[in-house]
Image (cartoon, rainbow, N blue to C red; front, side):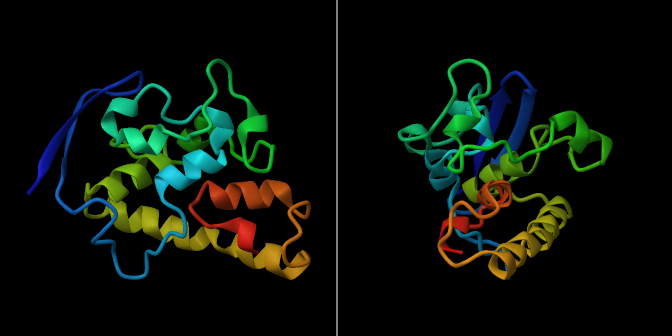
Length: 168
């Protein structure tokens, strides 16, 4: 049973999409994120400023324990307490932003997790997710297991791509 979603937030007005897959199921082969969107928000990602104006689009339980900034971005809310992302303008300049997801990868992941499917774009984003795992290999290579103080920026970035860097 498909649900149509209407989005009206600061970055999208009148955007519609259909959730055609069950929540958290029906992922493409080989796409196995280690964290759900709710877990990521609870751990602390994107300095607490991600999805603050579009909660109505996603399940309320995703935000029950989320670490969100009430004003300006607050990187102390991040799990590792550091900024680990580039500004949105840089993502735009590099062509990483798809018009359907103007906030970037995490917005795509939240919508994908929720059941939206976009042929072509899903494959592109999953390919980007796979490529990001090289950072986990670097943490494993250069850090002692369980040392959260080794490469905190890289570990935070991994969390923001749904890799659980706490277990590296």
